[in-house]
Amino acid sequence: MFEIELRDAGTVVVEGRLDAAQAVKAQTFLDQVAGQCVLDLEKLEYISSAGLGVLLKTHKRLMGSGSGIKLINVNHHIHDIFRYSGFDKLFEIVPMRG
Amino acid sequence: MKQKFKRNFEELQNIVTMTEVLFREEGLPPGLRNVVDLATEELFVNMVTYNTETDADILIQMTPHTHGVEVSLTDYDVERFDPTGAGPIDVDAPLDERTPGGLGLYLVLKMVDSIHYEYRNRQSTITFIVDRK
Image (cartoon, rainbow over all chains, first blue to last red; front, side):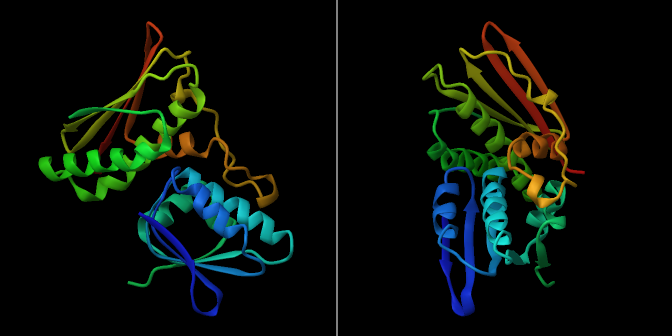
């Protein structure tokens, strides 16, 4: 299961498993986003390199126009993936509280 | 536990279900699930993406191992490609130099406890182990 949608105050909420089977859906959605993008990952259970590719491509596009992606409510496991991938140096990341 | 999967990404959900069943039935540590899922997906996707000369299913076997799980993926009618020799990724590179290519195998090698590649009679088998640290 994977869902992505725009919520209040321009925050994009991502839920479920962002794997290779769902990467096209995520990319298609994020290709429509302009300006600063806050991605709420509280309910993201899993991400693979296909999902990381979607985030990287979108972040590079938005950074080209002076904005970018901020990742919030990142759980411990996904934060590890970001750290191993060096994404913690590329994105502003706010870990999940508690 | 072993199961064959078609060569398409839609099978990922069925692979996750197989892993769920194994972890539940064998009482394996839930904390290992994400690493097992990640490594299995990356290796499966790699086989589907780069071996396009066959329609043969990919065989996945999962077995409890000491304090974790051993997973093997077997691909048929394939050229030799040893993922354990995948080149390094510069994870410290600035954004404009970063591309997602190669990140999957890099993560697999970083996160599993051991990995082994065997190639014989045009058949590739990759076996990895994830253990409780």
